[in-house]
Length: 583
Image: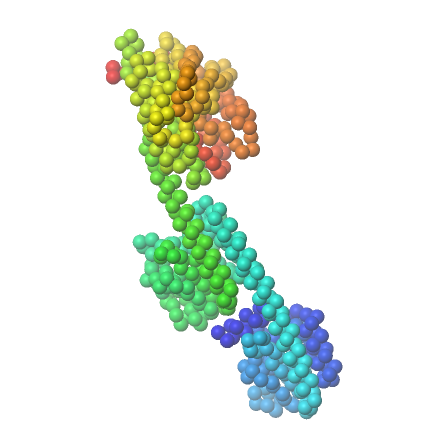
């Protein structure tokens, strides 16, 4: 960890193989005070030394501002943690084979350790001569004073960068608390997580694994599938991986470098991380064994106290988002299953073609209230064929409770129709309205309830509208009109309120369209304009097979985010009335 701490300090200092005005100034002071041809601020990275401060170095090294470790005397200063002072590098056993002697003409060398506030030796401030030289005590004192000043400069830069990163960590927490709270599914949660991490943390991979009975499974964003996710998409809980250990032991597991990975985990884990070019990983378990959040880096990583605290807090936000998302998905599934179970199988009626469409809302909290229904009435004594009842409606509110109320209203509407001798749509809606007045059915509903009676070669439509968007009727000539007659929505009957039936003859080739407001309501469009667009689509496609008509009407709804569910019921008068059973 000592070497990792040194490398972390170098990262914070922000110096590498590029000229830095402050470091070049120290190199010039060394050259002036000690009267040497070459002076360097040399910092030791993992596999090279770099010169952010430099005077007098020959080409090509002056342009590169770096050398491999085969040319480094600075590495001895770092290892020994004390000055290295040599009159002639060629006669010392430790340095005589260094390529710095023939390539850089380093004959006399005096290097002092540059340190951070924690005592890590980051490199050296050094004076170099091209011929043997006996360094005087005064020269070494001057070099030591300049080294102390240069170390203070490095420490100030490191401290400033730490303050900035702490501020970035605080900003990360603020963004996490807001951003993760808006995720609408697990893939979106992963996508938002990855967008949050840049700047000082900047992992090469952020992953979320959730637990089930079989172990851990990886949440994948289909828009951004990473190699690690295709290589390892599931782990047994007893596997020797950092992520599984974090879940098993319910504690944070940090692997700072490759050596720690090899020492602590299975060969399969090492091979997996090696194949993906990852060297460091932090795994934070989610509470209650829910799963684990992991960050991976391609190089050894030093985990500061503030960084660990910030990432642990982010894991807490992720846990809350996961719980909320899974709860909503379960609730959504329940609502969709409940609603699907209550949607009607359309009856076969000679002389009529029927088709229906239901699209659930993509917003998890906006499902459950829309329905359609179609059923045959008992045959009346003087009728040659059974009449057909149609209804479409929308419960105010969108959740499981709305789906439950929808089922109750649909059932009450059927019962009120079947229990009324005249089977009046208005009478049935009036009965349901009175039920809203006395039963806890919520804030209300809109509905269109209609009856189709055979009438020679035509069908007679009788309908009543309780505050619902108007049905659309396409006549055989392609013209479309809105059936605008309507009464108030279902809220609980008010004294003196009358509901009305309206009648219209439907000749052969007519198409009747019933729909809920999810088909026509748009945030960026007036509802009347949307109804006109729907009417235009009905006019253009009304003579096509009904599945094609429904596809045209719902074009774009499947791909666009829908805040409301959609129900559509379409009926075409297709021919004469054939024989029906006597039921």
